[in-house]
Image: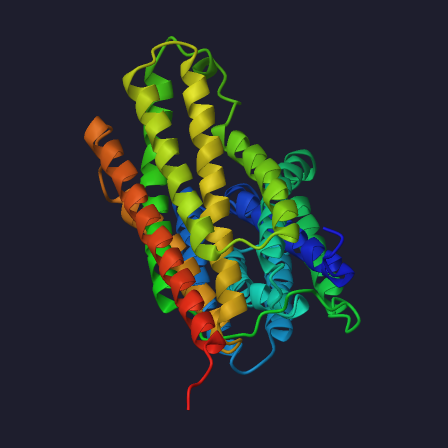
Length: 404
């Protein structure tokens, strides 16, 4: 990790602070409207839904805006909009003003999320260390989200929801200030710089489809786990509602992500290989889940669920983070923010499809999921060997003397 530019330390602080503030506002918004403004709960839920949906528009605006301005400038605008939006919500005494603030929050979030990764690529000068950097970025994002739900939630419950929102506004302002002073230091040249190219569109398209499938089956799997826990009296964990399987996923993501970030600092791994490993991890995760649903009946079932969440977290680290690093390293800076935005839109909309789709918890469904992930693994490893063979053939042509 010592080979990473020191100028990226404030960048990762910005990522953590932004997620901290965002998830703080997101966690308190409905409670604030219902309790402080005394608006109907139906109105609060509707406003929350609209604000979340507006993020999709923010992704598109952010991707297009990066064609006109630098990624850092768009990121600063996004953070500025988030800060203003949070203060509007915190100081509002009417439901309309609070709703406007949350809509602005969605736009600001979309602007930032599409441009911040491209700015990270600039800080690393498209180095091969980007795989490691994006893993760190993903870890800091998860830590920030965890702190947002925990710390802001505690402040809101102890001192009032308005105080919690104000704290979120201060956190956003801190992130904005730190980002202003985050610059690439010319003397910190990262090793093994890659020349930016158009990139392999096929890999990106396949990976996006894979992510869409992952989110769809993951949401259904977690719903089945919750149902299984609520209907199985023999499970000790079912008697403790404060226990959340999300914590298992968060812990696994942090530990495994740090390990991968350190490993990638010393060794470059092809994106297709990482995607292959991610597919295999996901397949094994669903095999474990299938074994838990079908075979175990007792306290030992918790072992299956822990194994599922740990491997699913590892699959995400081998799929989503490498894809984002690939896009910002290989694609032109004018287009990579828009591509990132489109990927986020897919990630956001697929769970909505899952909400209106019914999957039976059966051996057939889970077995089909395993087969899909294994099929993707075969495709990605095939692409890897095809690219490797192409490089070897080009090398042989260059080494072959020209006969006159």
